[in-house]
Image 1: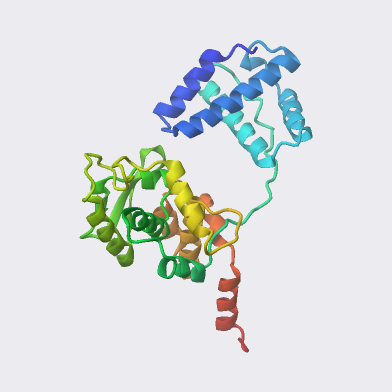
Image 2: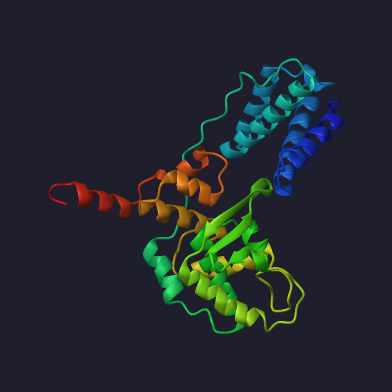
Amino acid sequence: MMDEPNSKHDFLRYLETEKRYSAHTLVAYANDLEEAFLFFSEEFDLGAPAQLRSSMVRTWVMSMSDAGRDPKTIHRKISSLRSFFKYLIRKGEVGASPMSDITLPKLRKKLPDFVEENRMETLLDKVEFGDDFSGIRNKTMIELFYGTGMRLSELIGLNLYSIDFSRKTVKVLGKRNKERIIPVPTETLESLTRYMEHRNAISTTEAALFITEKGARVYPKLVYNVVNQNLATVTTAQKKSPHVLRHTYATHLLNNGADINAIKELLGHANLAATQVYTHNTPEKLKKIHAKTHPRG
């Protein structure tokens, strides 16, 4: 196999300590590089990254395409290898990157999944969650997802001190350990107050905001299932996840006139390109535009 273990280890450590990538992202990078190096070793018997040529990379890309790999997966793997060689150049371990004239495959632009406003109103105003601890907690978590657009990991990481009831905000720890402050809707704060009354009745030393009936911090599968099962009562969409609620939050803000740069800050995106996926016009928005601008609207 290509002689790159130390370089790869150093690169992954760089991503973890300096770029502050998440454990999930680090695993993805490690797997992508491992797969690429195995291919180059078996196909071309390379001994070092410096021997890699663009033609070999193109062969690798074509092999993935011929195998029916998803274009998005191929896109990510090329990006991983490109980042690795940028790191090697910076460290002086290679003089040039074989990725310089490798183009990323075009991806089909897919609009983000979201739940319509009237369906969210039905979920939060008419669906019965129950008056016990679990029911109140579950509804509050969904309200917080929809009211703030936070990620699954961010909600799970919330602690008791994360909510500032007087300022009506929540402090979340996002990707790369970046903190941001998000406004919390008044109704969501009322739900949080009610939830806290029930949470305080549970004997626990856990600092987490959202806990299980046994007093432990909630975990990803539990929260995902809560969202999935409750969204299923108001939508037949294939995807019913916390991330769909994040998409819903952003789409509804945009449809109701929010500035895209403000949405970028609220979502914690590093650049505007990640937020621009929400600039599609939904049928509801198109109807509003038509009614407001067409002479006979």
